[in-house]
Length: 182
Image (cartoon, rainbow, N blue to C red; front, side):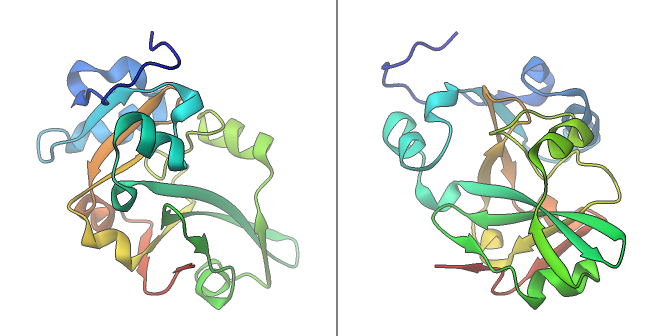
């Protein structure tokens, strides 16, 4: 187990060697891609798992780090869910860029308890891979500028290093110019 206060680098290992750091839905989604892509996972201290803390403690470049936000779009009584993937330090634009793909009149952050239960993931490490199949994944186009990105692993003590081009292959994903804003 990682001890707090210890300056470390993340030790990313191939997911086939380190799958105990992934919840079942994430592992099931990624394993078919493991032979095609260099997908890795690492253990991380949850206290340093995002933002400035991850940069300082582990030396992760800001450009590599992504945030995954889950939103709920509604129209009448119909609800649809989406993961928004934006670079660290950016906010997701909750305008028509999100409403239109969800066919929603209103978009809000999804209830945390619902998200963790439906996704089978832990708070603080929700990841866009392995989500329920009917959830969309909306990705800011700038994410595709990085060859590899670092995202939550689905468990609070894990991170994934994944090639950004994998997102383009996800059947429920859309790459959207201007999804992220300062």
